[in-house]
Amino acid sequence: MSSGSNGLWPWVLTAYAAPGVAEACLELQDTASQNVPLLLWTAWSATTGRALDADTREAACDTARVWEETAVAPLRAVRRALKIKAVDMDDDDREAVRSQVKAAELDAERRLLLALEALSPTASGPARPAIDALVAVARTWSSSIPRPGLIRLAECLPA
Image 1 (cartoon, rainbow, N blue to C red):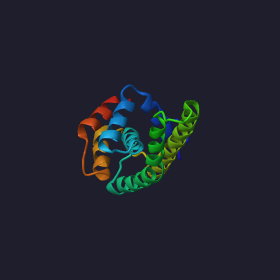
Image 2: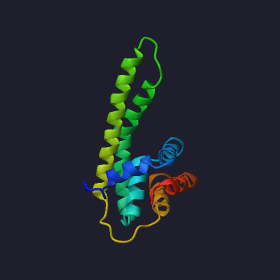
Image 3: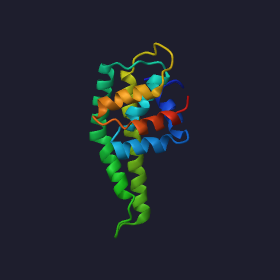
């Protein structure tokens, strides 16, 4: 994994903080069952001149799927369940556990991103438009392509 400023994790942190990116990502996750780390890795790949062939996209989707099913989605479900006040559960204790689960969920997503970065080809050309790569990986991830949401995400990402 690249630990420098051109690595995936620093790029993701910057991109996710850009106006509209978090909202676009969460909409794609919640309404189209897309995998946010996979989408962000794909956009990073395009913007850093990394061409993703079909085999790389498929391997990335396999990796994202196992992380999603085994760690990220279960942690997200627990975090969301803990968001709701519960009778006979102290709010401060509930929120403390929710914060710990949120940290574990973020760590699982970071580890997924590290695994995806390890699959990344070497940069071999100029930056490419993110939308083409996003549509290609969404097609590999699912039979339904949420093109309007992908366009919205691509438009919000920093250049």
